[in-house]
Length: 492
Ligand code: GLN
Image 1 (tube, rainbow, N blue to C red):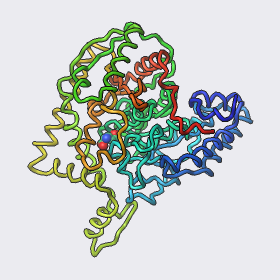
Image 2: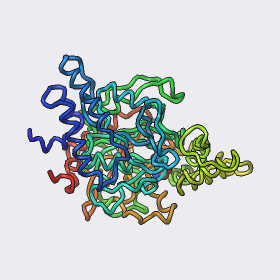
Image 3: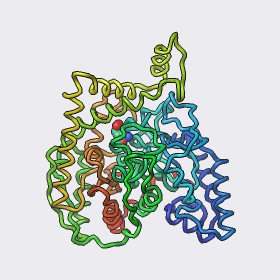
Image 4: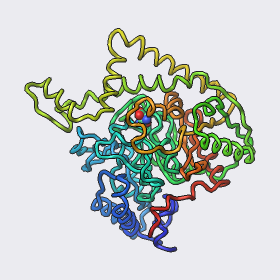
């Protein structure tokens, strides 16, 4: 084993090396910390790195190993979490000025689970402010850059988790997904992300954006890693009222199972209009691969998904406008003193929130206000039900549904910042499954003519994450896309 190549191994592979004693967690953690030190300046993926905390966790794992105690499924492997997931004693900013110095007094449910599973949490990752965005350009602390092409966006809002994982600054990361925020960045960075069914992972300790949509999700280099991480973070938690009480399946055993006879639903009208040529042709090739693997391709239509963008950009801002009301300068974060209480609220929020967050608060407040509620919010909720029904109908005819993850490969930084609507249209494929609450994976399925990664999105009925793991794994085994890596980060 050559030390220099260790960082290219998957989370699952690295945890077995630690478990078998071939490498210590301290050695592994130093290796990744060293890579972060070397490359983060170029990418701006990390907002906080805590070497002391990381090395202390690694030392604890190594001590357990010496005492021959059983190690957890993530034993000793460095990973990082998006900066809207609370970490006790470590700054959690949501990439916002308003929480710039906020240090949570508790760990999120998923962080507790990670620690229990033996993961080494090395730091917190950059994102669009409060997870609102599709390019990471809404971070108050500067955009993240795409490891495949530094003048391009890594996608958003989990740009930090995607860039850090794609360039192997960590073995894997946790992001959050409200309308595509792990899937679109994974697609732009050539890696894998698995958004679970709404309710599968506790939201306790995730700073709320749109509570009926938010889910925490793994961002990894292959699907087996995603399955391992999901197995660790999934499960009931009484601190989240929407947490699903059912058993967690063993997702990893799905890797290697045959997919012959699986019915893949193709939503043709969805990707033939308005989709980049390279993306459409990568999806066509992916369909061919599924056919060769013995799948049956079934054309399905989802008549209401064209309303996905309109519905989401009412529902999500409406929920955001009430969730973000808590940032009032009294209980959390920034306080800019004004002449009286109201003036203090106004000044704090004016200085603390960035332009996109303010836009969403205004949109949401408007959609919920008396006189407009019925016309916008209530109507959007009704159309959301129609979208939900479309999926229920489609899944009578197929087992999974395939679309592109995003209509284009990674675009250039600055290209869409002046046009919020163009930015919102990035989410055209990822929003409908979020509105329906169903699980969805984004996995690498090709490269554009200029060498940028392209991702496909596979969706399944609620609580069928295992099916997504199975089909994605079969695809990975018969293609080579997950093995390509951004060259600039392979210097050592
Ligand atoms: N891009 C979408 C938005 O801006 C989705 C973000 C997310 O999933 N957090 O709202």
